[in-house]
Structure formats: structure tokens, C-alpha cells
Amino acid sequence: MLTLKFIQENKDLVIERLKIKNFQAEGIVSQILDLDQKRRSTQQSVDNIQSELNKMAKEIGMLFKSGKTNEANELKEKNTELKDSVKLQGEELASIENNLNALLVQIPNVPHESVPPGKGENENKEIRSGGEIPVLYDGAVPHWDLAKKYDIIDFELGNKLTGSGFPVYKGKGAKLQRALISYFLDTATNAGYNEVMPPLMVNEESGFGTGQLPDKEGQMYHVTADNLYLIPTAEVPVTNIFRDVILSAKDFPIKMTAYTPCFRREAGSYGKDVRGLNRLHQFDKVEIVQVQHPEKSYDTLNEMVGHVEELVKSLNLPYRVLHLCGGDTSFTSALTFDFEVFSVAQEKWLEVSSVSNFESYQANRLKLRYKEENDKKTQLAHTLNGSALALPRILAAILENNQTEKGIVIPEVLRPYTGFDIID
Image (tube, rainbow, N blue to C red; front, top):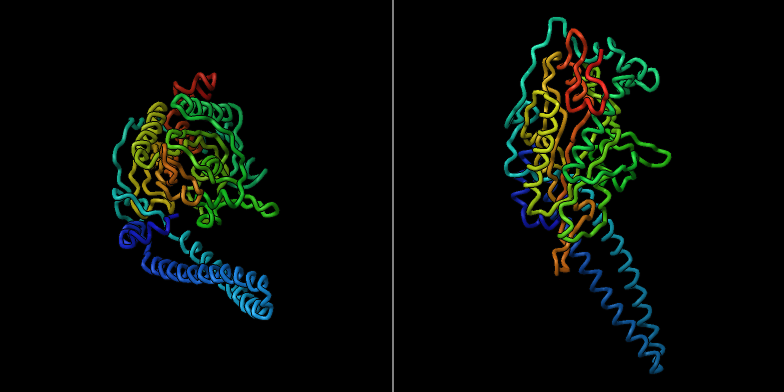
């Protein structure tokens, strides 16, 4: 979340920049500043009374020592009244602080100055593209038909076992899925990312730390008996490794990667755009996460975008990179680039990755700080993450774009992992 100090010192900037995200911040910012003024006033009153109580305690002791019992008892009565007063004001202060925090978490991250205005995905800006769109043979079909034809993904069985959006990968389909995961992880570790295997469930504190709670609570699967949440992305547990941690500036950059299944309720999703692998409730993804010095985070963002681009290129998939407009930039992100690959059989672009810089927004929620060498003062770090890559739509594009009359040709970089060249 934004720091109170940042809002105080940049009120007009916050209000104006959040209009890019189509968020009208005037009212809530005014409430925050008014509450903060009330908090300061109440805190000052509490401090004054506490100071008077401390002074009074010394006076009472001196009166008792000098034998002035009556005067001491009178002062003790006044002391009791002041203690009651400071208790009430302390409760009021706690209530004000709770209300203040409840408002602060409702304000999105301020978008980077380069983020263009726009209401949604149709107004995102393509910044570059690559790869060639293949010409398929007559009779080419979408991946859900290919899955049935070659018996590699069973959507009906997944529906039987769990429900829609939970496919079962079979035979060469399962091996191809595993090959993609291994290839993405190997590429990340070769690029200097440290692999971790985090839990698939997190507590409320972790959900709050990366911004999924309270903003996206309805999109997460909640294990109510234990008050735990199934992760929507590895970003959540991996970034929370550094919750309540103070780093040294020399520790940067911190680079981590993780493969996990991801779980999303996708409430309200329906229609042709969710068919097959296009939108699932459980899917596999390899994530890259970095914790970086604020002065270097945008260079790091470009580096991460380059990493994802090389992955997509290596799979010989036609792709484009989008600079997200304000209306499509997430609540917590300052700047996001999306990758989409083209599905020839579906004749549409499929999103396969988002790479984002959150600046200090997550770090403030996480209390993730660092110190410069020989400096006792702590500062907020910057956090970044990206999908490298999300598997369902990558798999869909590979199956559809590489289909031939003889079978589905496996991209060359994956063959050492699959052990086969074609699905036939």
C-alpha cells in the first residue's frame, strides 16, 4: 500500500495519477488526511496525559515519604481519573488507526508515469511483436479437439473428478506439461534465479502482504476450517518469504523462481473464451520474483521482460508484448507488460505472462525493508514478478500451431525433456 507519508507529501500527484487507473481518489485521500490529523491530535493528548501521570507518580511518592498522606491520597484520586482518561483516549487512538489502515489498503498503487490512460484491455498498447504465424493444413482444429483426438488431455474426466476447469493430463500430454515446467525452471535457474518450492496454501498475513487480500478475496479458494487460502500464484508465498525482513543493500538483487499449481475461482467466467485450456481453476505456472533496490527496479523489469521474451521465442510461437493501460493495470502494480501468443486454430491472441514492477507498494504491506551500508535508517525495497511462463495457453498454442496431418510436432527445445518429437 502507499505510505501515509507519500500521500501527505504528494496528495495532488496521487489523485491525478490514480485517474489513469480510473480510480477517483479525492474523497478517500481527504478522509485519510483528516483521520491522520485526528490521530496526531489524539496521540498528542495521550502523550501529554502520560507525561502528567509520570510527573504525578513522582509527586505522590515524595508526599508519602514526607508524611503528607492526605495530599498524596488526593493526588492519587486525580491520578486514577487521568488513567481512566488516557485509557479511553488510547482506545480511541487504536480505533482511529484501524480506520486509517482500512482506508489506506483501499488505494491502488500509483501507476508509473509511462502508463497510458485507458479503460480496459482493448486500449493496451502493443510495443513489439515477433515470430511468424504458421499456415495450418485444411482441417486444423482447436486444442480441445486435439486433446480428444490424441487422448492427451481429458476435460470430461476432470469434470467428473472435481468440476469444470480441472483438466486431467494424460500420456504424452502429461509428459509435455512436465517438460514445459522443467524447461522453464532450468532456464530461470540458468539466468541466476534461485529455485524454491513453497507451500500451496498461505495465511491471511501472506495474502495481505502481496495485495490479494482484501482486494481479491472472492477470487481465492478459502479453506475456512483453517483460515488458509490456496495460492493464486507462486508470487504470494515466494514474495512473503521476505515479510518482516530487513535486508542489506548489498543483498540485491534477490532472484527466485518457483513452479506451483495455481488456484483461481474465476468467478463470473463463462462463454467461448473459457473453453478448453483458455481459463482454468487449477493450472501450472513457473514464476520469477525479484527483490531489488529502488534505483534499479526498472532496469530489472526490462531484464525480466527480456527473459520472458526469450522463452516465448525459443518455443517458436508468434507473440506480442503489450504495455498495459491504466484500466488494465492491476491494483498493486505500478507498471505491467503482458505477453500474448497467437493461436492460429482459434484465431485469437492468448495471454501467457504478466511482468510487473510493484515498486514499494507490496514492500510497505510486507514491511520489507533494507539498509544502505553504514546507515541505520531503513527504506522500503521494490518487488517485481512475472510469469515465466503460465502453462495452459502456452500448451494450447503449441498444440494448435504445431499440428500437422501426421501429428503435433514438439518444439525443438522441449525434445530433450519430452523424449519424443511428435504426438501422433
